[in-house]
Length: 521
Image (cartoon, rainbow, N blue to C red; front, side, top):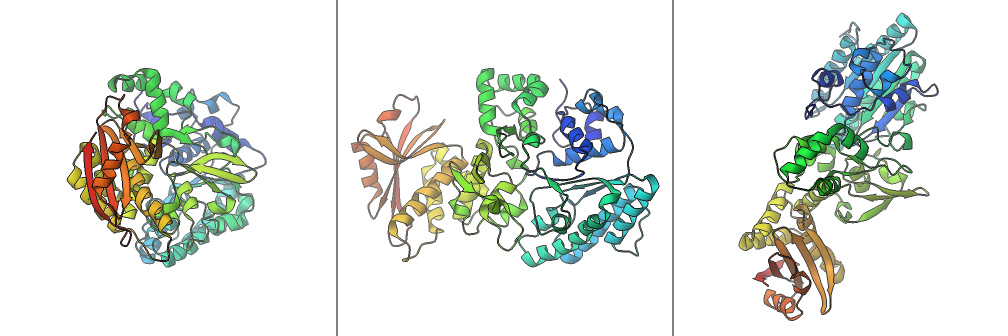
C-alpha cells in the first residue's frame, strides 16, 4: 500500500515520498488550457487541499513533467513549457497589529519575489517590486509570469475580531492586488485560493476578468474526494480500517460516508465529496471508532471571532436553511452574516439549488457534532471542549456532574419580559439541550410521539436511551411521574440498552434550571 500523507501540502514533496496523490490534474489542465480565461478564483473551506493544488500548478508551470507520470495531464498534449512562477502564501503573516502585519507581509512578498528570480529592492514598496517584476518577466519571454496566491484572505480573516485592523490590512493587501489590473496582458495565468470571498478587496473590484469557479458545476470535485476516487486510491487502507473497527465492509463505507462525505460545492452538480484531511487522519489512526478529524486540527479564526453574533443561534445542525447569493457576501466585514460565515468555513454546504435560492445543511456527522459543541459552548459562555465534556458525563451516567453542568448552561441564557413565554420555552430550554446532545453524537427526536402522548425529547447513543421531560414551575419528580405513567419507554424496550428517564424543571421567572432528577426505567 502506498502511504497516506497527513501533513504534506506540497505536490513535489508528496510525489518524491511516493505517497498517495488523488489525481486532480485533469481539472488543472482544463484551467490552464482554456483559451478564453486565464484568471481564476476558487474558495473552499480550510484543509481541503487548496495549497496542494497551488503547488501542483506551480510544478506544471515550471515544466517539471517528471513528477506527473501516470497522472491525467501526462496523457494530454500539454507542452510543458517553463514559465516564471510567483507563488504567494499569506498564511504565515502576523496580524497582532498593523505594524506586525506590515513587517511580516513585506518579508513574505520579498521571499516570494526573490524565489521567482526577481532582485528585490528593499528601498521600494512591495507593490512597486511586484509591478516591476511583472514587467521584467514579461520582457524576458513575452508570455508573462504565472501568479499563484494561496490563502489570499487569511490576514483579513484572522483580524476580524478587530474590524479597524482588518480594514487597514485589507487596504494594504489591495495595493498588491491592484497591480494585476494594469498588467493583465503581462500575466500568463493567475490563480487565487482562499476560504472566503471578500469582494471589496481590489483583486475583485479591479479584475472584471477574474473567473470565480467556487460554484462552477465543472469543478465540483476539484477539491475533496469523490466516492470513486476514494475507492480507486484508498481501497486497501479502507478495508484494513474496516477490519480494525470490526465492521462489515459495506457497513463501514456507509458509516464513513455519513461521517465525512457531504460537501457539495456546485449549484446544479449534486456531486458530494469527502473532506481530504478527515480521510487521511481517519485511515492512519489506530482508533477503532470514528471521531472528528478535520475539526480536531483547529477551528477557523474567522468563525470563532463571530460565533456569538446575533443570528448564529438560529442555525440548526439537523435542519436546512435557505439562502440567496447576498447571504454569501462577506465584503462588509462589520456586518458579516452567520450563514455566509458558516458556509465559507465549511460548517454549511449546499443541499439543493433552484431559481437563485440555495438550501444549505450541515455537511456530515463530523461537522454536525462540532457545530453543536460550538453552539452549546456559546450558549453557556464556555468553549466547545466544555460542552463536549458535559455530553461525556451524560453518556457515563455521572448525573450530579451532568446536572450541575446543565444548570450552568441555562444560567447563562438571556431572558427578558418583552419576549413571549412560549418562544423562550422552546428556544431557551429545549434547543440548548439538543445542541449539547448533538455535540456528542446523540441521535435525538423532539416531541417523540407515543400512543399515550409526546415526550419532550428522546436521545439515543450506544450507552443508552434518555427520555427527557421538561417542566416549568413544577418539580422533576412530576416530570418523571409523567414519563412513567404514560410509559414513554415502551417503544425502546426492544433495544438491548438501558433506558433512563430524566426530569428537568425550570423557573418561569428566571428561566433557570432549578430541579433535576433521573430514574432508570
